[in-house]
Length: 284
Image (cartoon, rainbow, N blue to C red; front, side, top):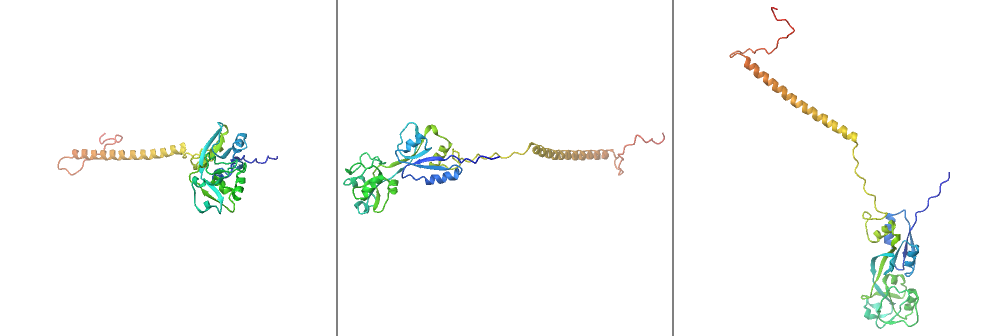
């Protein structure tokens, strides 16, 4: 009789926007749920939420805000902001800058900008729309202007000839975990616990350890046997002590009676032996 092959466990699918690195969380997942694989779905920032709604991902690490009454979100951390310039730019010689230091610069803002700086410094790039961050980096490398972006994206697009410096007073970019509220399950709860830093013992998802087993009780027959032995031993002791005391008291009483029954001055003890009623007395 042939048996059907084992079906692989369904994967937990996580949508990722560029710049987010989930490696440390995935290592914890592997330790707690080694039988549940994780599938990473790489997507652009504007497609992460539609993927969630379409059911193509179970959860998503996104740049906040992620709008929608059907979504639940948890803020995780906020990234620092950097400015990307060429190595021969005056900004490259300092460790960090203020927004005011960019007032005289040409600022390139791509259409997929994730910083959403409502009042950025500098002069906007006038060469037409720039579709992507990668296109904006090309313009910076050509010496056309500077680019302000989240730090992780600056690392992602780092190339030779360019440097990035932190902008102290620029707005940050918040990263959060999002999921469709109605599709919440124990695997989602497990991933929420991992990104929040819960230990395995405090986990409320599928990876929580089983509750400890209650201590084993002795069988009823063993308890009865033990109680019987203890009772017998106690009973034996209780019988022995009163019997000895009674015998001693009786002996003491006889001694007193015999002493009273002797005549004064007589050293011969009187016999305490009773006549045998079955033996005939002399003379009968």
